[in-house]
Image 1 (tube, rainbow, N blue to C red):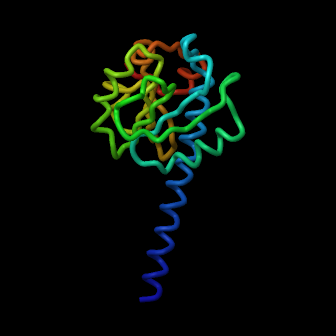
Image 2: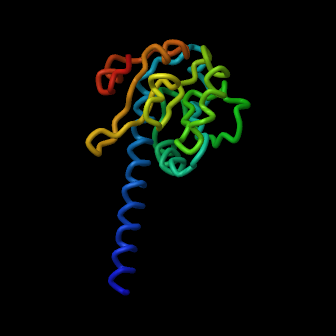
Length: 168
């Protein structure tokens, strides 16, 4: 019985550690997305705002980056999003897997307003988001839908698209 409990505890610890590591990498990717996108003139002053809709486990990782880094001359602020209201002031909207059914509610509200939607669900870069996290061979990567990004009103650097997995 003790061995079974120890094994279960060890597996839970490993799973929790892997999930925390994924959140750290997602936050770092998001920071690099921010730096490698040319934002509309209206979005180049004030705070650089990253909104998170859904599971908030990435927020501490984003806040850690925000404490040390900025995007150009802008300070990074992380905002927890509770509804589709007031998202046009964001730069990046991250919709987590647990709330992915709500992505359509955001797409129309942010189109052409310089807001990049980042998701975490297979297939979403093809139909909904500009950037989507995926796993390939156990490694975290991201898909880039250049058409969705252009429709959002931003220009993406060649470096960002070259490092991502293209969506056509």
